[in-house]
Length: 278
Ligand code: BT5
Image (cartoon, rainbow, N blue to C red; front, side, top):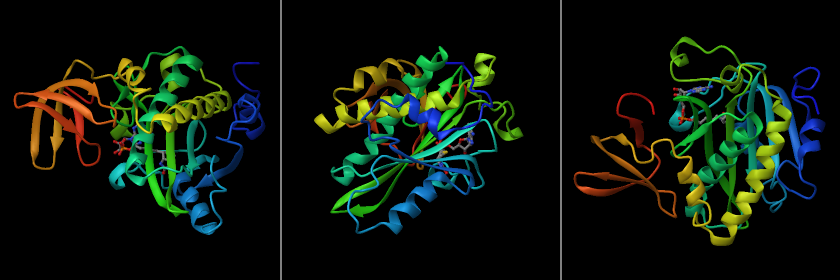
């Protein structure tokens, strides 16, 4: 297969050609040239079909452009036309709601290892939801709970990857990068999407077996960008510094500070390097 397809455009058939037969992630793909947010669209789909059971599991919503891409806590996600991968996967796991936030960690692992395999670039994970190359953010993940079907939660995992874009708005120039900028050539987005879906499903099955990160923790930690390094933990009440040790089986970040080992639960807390973002 050519490294690039002829047009470089997103193409459902090309993505499906990469999927392992029988996998459920991406078994249906809804493509939009432009949409407000693929996470919002996935939630709309779930709301429309509420009460019909778990028949949307594995659907992927994919867009060439988002006009209202969202990050966590109401932050914006820059997602212009052509070059990005803006996609949301619907999951309807039979799991208690409180363990679903760990799916962000599972997704990050899948994206990180797929980027490495597909591009050869040395990407790393910045806990909990960023993929970093050379100190800059190339991908962010937004996991949202979208209601309940048959008593267990419907989940939307939004994945935004700066794949082939070469420009960023002024405010992101120092902190963001793309796969193409790092590699020096464009990548085939369709193949990368297919690989992510395959890997994510594999890791997801492992996660379902243990219902925690015990099987995935070692691999996550291998790629944790801050591991063993000094970090600043920014909380609403103030900030402190410490050494990032790794994660526990619930996906909590462990930071050793003067007061001992602190457990950092994702949410309102930000973790930064001492001298910058990483
Ligand atoms: C995230 O939030 O990193 C989650 C981003 C999820 C985006 C996907 S795209 C498909 C799906 N549909 C959506 O609407 N969203 C998901 P957070 O950790 O809060 O980081 C947001 C911050 O990252 C912003 O405040 C900016 O500083 C920075 N940022 C915004 N756009 C960026 C981009 N394209 N690349 C790198 N950094 C960006």
